[in-house]
Image 1 (cartoon, helix red, strand yellow):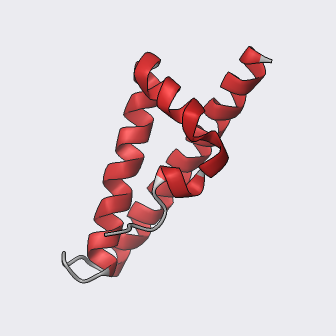
Image 2 (cartoon, rainbow, N blue to C red):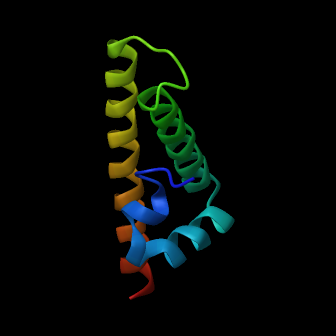
Length: 83
């Protein structure tokens, strides 16, 4: 089963960096884990496996977007630190 918007899909060129951050940065790991959990819940709702009100789905999508922005910023900062 392929779930849309997984981190590996959203950041294909940054996957190595993401894996390293997940191993060595607890705060980043929490961000990435939260993103994956929310993304998978959105998938279950959209595929009608889990019932939810439209407002709940909208809130989850907003939260996922904010987490994605935080993840992108952390990946960019990590790359700047290495360069």
